[in-house]
Length: 235
Image (cartoon, rainbow, N blue to C red; front, side, top):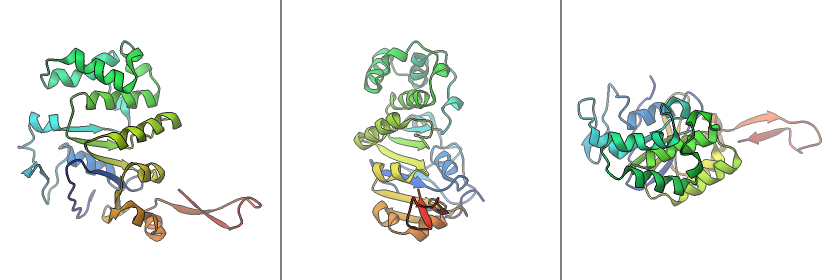
């Protein structure tokens, strides 16, 4: 059982963080919402229409963008320019050059357009893949651990970018500090693959027992003369 009795309702232009430890089912849920996986029970509605293997069409793919945790799994074009332009060609856009240059300017990656994306750092690869998704302006953005490969500067840029974004966004992460900065609503998936919280992130952060049961925080011993307490809550 990858996901057990998960029921969600997400509104247009809402930003949600999906929290859970590794193996809880966060990535599986994102793939389900992207129409890559399908459940054997229950239903998934997107814009009030059921999403099934038979109903998933190019129109749905154009409205949903998904960024996987490992950017290298998504890279297959020779240059950054080609990587960004690929989806535009697939979706039959005509203003490809203008869109690529516009998104490159927004992401400050103009100097990378002629480079191989495989030659870039992990954070740069993640940035390129995000640009290749946003260039076709999807309505729903699904991000799986987007800051995992980013250094502190890139992570800060990403959080600022998220705050300013006017889209429906679901971000899967186990980084509580980034989660707190990016959204007011949090959904927590337990290690038993069940939804155990759905509400205001402020309320969640006050429930240390729930956070610990979901393996999002833990206690551990610390060296003497550093902290007054024997145990330290570690995010």
